Amino acid sequence: MYWEKEFETIERKKLEKLQLERLKKTILDAGKAPFYKQLYQQKGITADKLKHIDDIRQLPFTTKQDLRNHFPYGFLSRPKQEIIRLHSSSGTTGNPTVIFHNRHDISSWSNLMARSLFCAGIRDTDVFQNICGYGLFTGGLGFQYGIERLGCLSIPAGAGNSLRQIKLMQDYGTTVVHAIPSYLGRLYEVFQAEGLDPRKDTDLRLFVIGAEPHTEEQRQRIEELFGVKAYNSFGLSEMNGPGVAFECTHQAGLHIWEDAYLVEILDPETLEPVPDGEIGELVMTTLDREAMPLVRYRTRDLTRIIPGSCACGRTHARIDRIAGRSDDMFIIKGCNVFPMQIEGVLLKIPEVGSDYLITLEHVDGVDEMIVEVEVRRDWFNGDITRLDRLSRMITHQIRDEVLAKPIVKLVEPGSLPKSEGKAIRVNDKRVLDTVKI
Ligand code: ADP
Ligand code: ZN
Image (cartoon, rainbow, N blue to C red; front, side):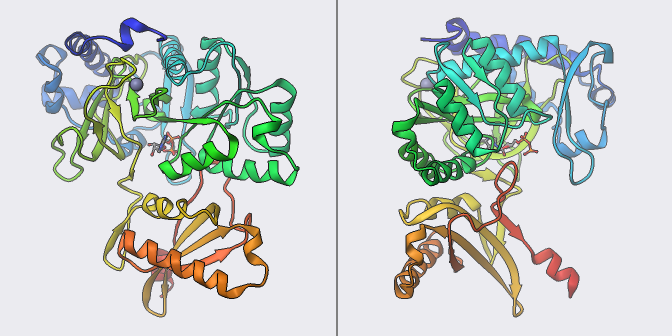
């Protein structure tokens, strides 16, 4: 069952033809935006020189810094009166990244969202509660338009206030929830505190989780706690937001919608393509956006193309869950570490709760990695040797995974600071420490 069979199961040859047509149009459109106009004139780039989709490799990249430098309207390829919406990042450091959409763009994005939700098994009979900020963040309105296009009963719940979220679920018989994975562990704790069991006391059957890095272990936990299937949703504001890549019911990687995005996986150092199956940086070009096309946008997200075809019959390539962002990686004691490696270790341990925080700091002249881990409340009943043993076990397992020995501190559930939106997993105090010295 497909939302748009013709596009979702399109033969590769036909897909490539469609991509080339759309790429040419994209370059034509992009050339009207001040940023690309200057760049393409300087380099003699024109749409008619593109003969094959691989010719994309001759075009220059676009970075987040370019978007910031040309804030706010430097990437606009249509007159302002045609624009109907903007979304933007928080911009706590420097200019925010802002993306503009015209009617066509919003409609195309809504359709991709509906296609994505349908592909994960969501139907118009579902009651869909969207636990996501409805503002400049794309997870609110992006999902809202897709849910409506699909025809579910939508509950635009917004983020936070867990008691109210639970009440909404119970009042209206919510069957599907979209939320960021780090929030769902906390939501479960609220269910427990209220003496409720989501498996018995709600009609929940399916979750959509995404917008932040998470491991397979975290997904499995969420599925077990709530008795639901949880599907991975990937997107970034620069590529609209959610609806870029989504898992189908086979949960075997995320179909990345190649009729709307041209996908490259490149070695982040050499910027040359890596073979399918190997991890590299995801670089994307919009193929169906009019107001603000982006060409070869460097996402910094690290992933790989999963070789082979999917049992669902969709022909669009699948990407693996995001291994991390190239700017997430930190170096401690000479070892390169991704936070998700640590999460993978922690969430395999049943005693570990839903939150953890990695702090990097100078302690007595050496760099240390302190990992604070929430563990189940009943472990704090005075049995210090038991806690000690657990802490040693976690220390060894992290060291085996990342090769640097951490200082592990076990803390009570709920005691680590909670962020409003996406979880903050790493607090690197070393820069500050250096400044103080
Ligand atoms: P910001 O850059 O301000 O966080 P976005 O909301 O556009 O704004 O965030 C997009 C980023 O979020 C992606 O580039 C990626 O790093 C991360 N992300 C989104 N969805 C997922 C997912 N399913 N798994 C892992 N990371 C994700
Ligand atoms: Zn599939």
